[in-house]
Length: 145
Image 1 (cartoon, rainbow, N blue to C red):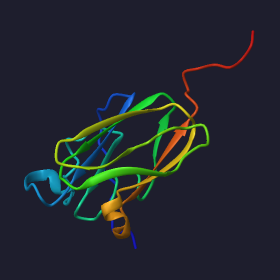
Image 2: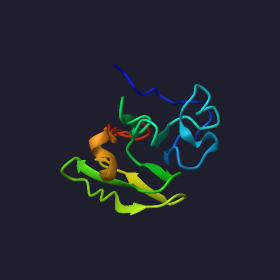
Image 3: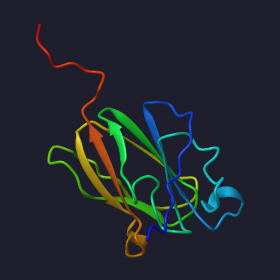
């Protein structure tokens, strides 16, 4: 039943993730189709594309990050947005609700642990939804001496 394939590769910075909106409009290797489509993408890369209307990871499985991680979203084709639908009570993520064009970028640092559910509004009915799970930062200690 899985119509989407998980894209991953090695070599990313531990403190950032990339979400790209790629698709069938630009030619080249932005299509996200084929087994080598992600070979040049860093680990912790999320890619959404018009071929199967998905965020990678995010749609089939969530992007899991530590609190304090900055996620970098990049549009590789036009007509996408990122609209949060559910998030932890203390979070204030507004997403990028304006529909943007190719090469637009947007950064957000996730500081509140919990699950964030988001959609691309123009393509939500085609299954373009995603999740980010933010865990407590593993680099901090709350123990008292």
